[in-house]
Image (cartoon, rainbow, N blue to C red; front, side, top):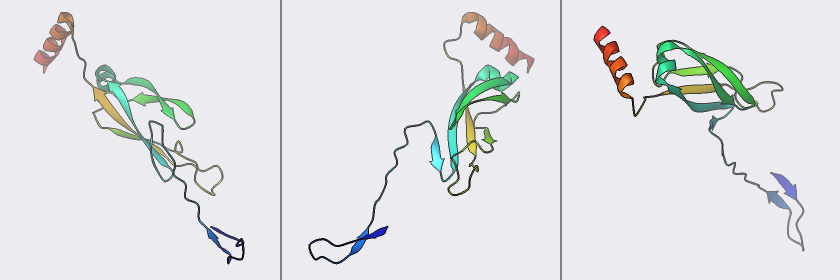
Length: 120
């Protein structure tokens, strides 16, 4: 807030401005930290591999560990929002993996899954 002079003989007063920030991104925002859900296919979750994810300032390549479970969370340090009045400092980005199950499997794929289940 700041003071403004009164007009037409009215006394000086304070002016309050309220900002509403609309979030149009895939990220949820809490202070300087960002949160995002990332789809992970079943095969990468089982075997591991690499995926590319969006961050606030570009894309990064993430290594996925073999056996990654649904709802696994990883923290990308310093990939969140800039921290107010701290030059060069950023919050963190928290990624939650959402493992997607394959649908519309072919006959061959179903047979392979059946063989895998029999190995257990």
